[in-house]
Amino acid sequence: MLLAFLKFTNPSKVNRKANYWFGLFLLLWASFWIEEITAITNLSPLNEYFSAALHYVQIYISLAYYLSVVFYINPNFRFRMSDIKHLVIPGVYLIALIVQSFSETNPDSPTHFLTAALMICQSLLYTIITLVKLRKHQKKIKLFSSDTTKFDLRWLEYIIVTLLLFTIVFGIYSYLSDAAPPNVYLNFLLLTIVFFIAYYSLKQKEVYPFDEKQRAGLIAFNDEPCEDPKRKILADTEIENLKNRLSILMTEEKPYLDNELNLVKLADLLAVNSHQASYLINKGFNETFFHYINRHRIEMAKELLVSRDKNNLTILGIAFESGFNSKTSFNTAFRKITNQTPSEFKKRSSVL
Image (cartoon, rainbow, N blue to C red):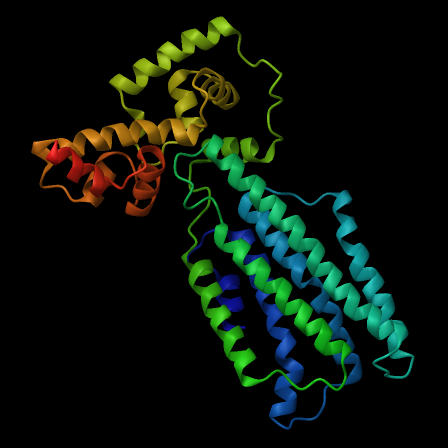
């Protein structure tokens, strides 16, 4: 609950809408322990109507998580009438709870089974939808970003698995009336998971920290469907002309040394739009924007690593000089392109 209110207040002032929905997800998740707390502290049992209302709002936990992912990926997302479909399962769940309240409390009753099944189905459905959405996002960001570390949102995938497993356990526990209360080991594990979530969620910086023009361009590019590979955005003669211009630009002005370089910035330098720039790199060089820019950065890094004038620079210093903004992203890109670490490359080069 403390983490939820930290996300609501958002002291870092980043990803405002995404953090609001993520905070709501955490608050709903925390509500699962209210009934357990009343039991272990010898408080009076919860009012049956309050308990039913509590169970009802908990059906929205996976939906709140899904919406937080949606707003992380696209801060400009707007709800449409078609989004009312997200209320179908909660609506059926509400009817089942109402029917259950007028019947005897029997763990073997059809409505008791239905409510538990709906909770699990809702979680499973949104786990799949969210995973697909994150995977598509991770694939598309390489088309417009040269550094995917702050964009990939991979930590959100790990939480989905936790959410699914927890919901299944809770659903089975709710269905089995004679099940023992969650033991101290399970709660300690869940506390550890909360600390994991806290670390990564509070560490997450603004996903699109660019000026309004770049922000709008990148969000639109990420939100649109992939280009039809058969559709020609540029003629063959235009591709050859732009390839020459881009090669000259990369050699003379070295825009890749800007660690915040993105497709919109590069497109402006070439005086084309972002879709044309993406098409040029994909078709003209048979690479993604991510690989194309980092390949040039690695070539610069290799020169610096063997240069005697740069012997005073550390690996991190080489990374910054080459346009990378972290040692991790530098090492990852260097190993992927050269099949060796920067240190290994420097050692072998010095021997030669």
